[in-house]
Amino acid sequence: MLSYKRWIGAFLVLVLILTCFACGNIGMHQDETEENSDLIVVGFSQPGAESAWRVALTDSVKEAFTEEKGYKLIYKDGQSKQDNQIRDIRKFIQQGVDYIILCPIVETGWDTVLSEAKQAGIPVIICDRNVVVSNESLYTAFVGSDFKAEGEKAIARMEELYPESIEGEGPEVNILHIQGTLGSSAQLGRSHALEKALEEHTNWHILAQDCGEFTKAKSREIMKRFLEEVNIRDVDVIYCENDEEAFGAMAALNEAGLGYGKDTNLRIISFDATESALEFCMSGQIDLVVECNPLQGPYLYNIIEMLNDDKTVPKITYVDENYFTSENLSSEIIQRRKY
Image (cartoon, rainbow, N blue to C red):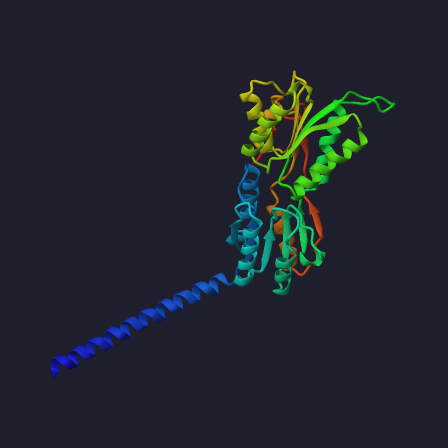
């Protein structure tokens, strides 16, 4: 009988210890929750990490929204699929984040999920590429590049390379066009500039065109096929809609033992201005690189800080961008690049 009572007593003591331990843990988790509740939570959806440029944008946003500045950033990689990004945004809504930053892979198809964010009272800032929606009130602001202006810089360089007479006559200019991801703001803006130039310059012609999806591998395949379809000696310009595509085209030309760049009749136009592309540009292998600035974190931070202070923010904010040729480049400029 005594041993039974001792067993019961020991059991009750054990239950008491476990209960106290559990309560202590609950208290600890409550403290952590209370501590983290002071942070402003930002959900960040990226299409992927397909290029050095995209990685630089991600790093810039991560550097802008740190706990030291009062933020918690939740980053999601969409693996180059819009469905994944839509799923991630819905997850952000379920988590009750304070803000959503969306870098859309394409412009269309966002109305429903952005409506859900608006109904939840979560401001959405569109970053890098823009969206086309039925009601622009579905997002709060856009921060990114003016892609049409980027394309116009490339066209201005081509007009400089191939001038026309006062009568509007000039040499035939034959172009290979490697487009970016179809339907993305970058592709639409850069392609639009070229298409407009073709209307204005009747002596400019596209010999072949295909979508390189902003990747080196895909563009290398396309360029190899172009070399089978056209006489490369007839080509004057390869218009690549980002640096990765330019690298792919160059790889295919190298494999075929074909020259390009300065001292040849074949010029390469590119966009983004990553460090590697600028090195090729300074050496004359790429004729022009139009900058697409990925360091957008500070711009996004300023927008959200204004919203925190209940200030009105601009609907559109374009980031500062430049363009580069071998004439205006130096090793010092390239060494200062962050991407």
